[in-house]
Amino acid sequence: MLPLSNAGVRPAMQLEGRIYMTPVDATAAPLLDHRFSVANPIPANSPTPWYNDSLVLPREAPPHFVLLGIEYVDPIADKRFRQAFFMRWDGVQNGETQPDFVHVTSHEKAVIESRFSAVIGPYTTDA
Image 1 (cartoon, one colour):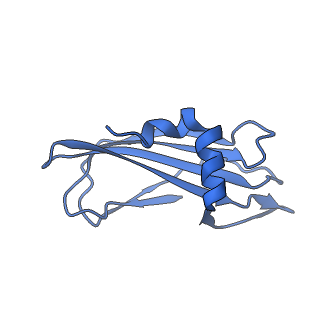
Image 2: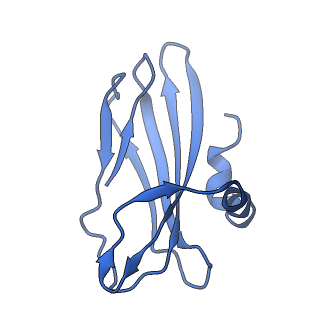
């Protein structure tokens, strides 16, 4: 589950995004490449969790970068906004799923921006 929350003071409209999970060492295919959208307005201070119950984790999975890009519209300002989030997940070790996503380091962020610019670029440029 990835909980998203509208921390603004106005509703967010036309939310679209992408979740991309790829091994840190880039030796295997991405574990997940999922695009999503939310049709309803997301009120201010409202959580919008994203679930994927169909994702089955392998018994062993190396550490992964978790990239989240979102794009939404502020209906009052009539302006589109984009945001990107860079996280790391320690994978599955000895059949035990590591529970948390953690922030990446500045160095890891630079690696992500360079290696995965086609994935994350649309969420880091001005609308």
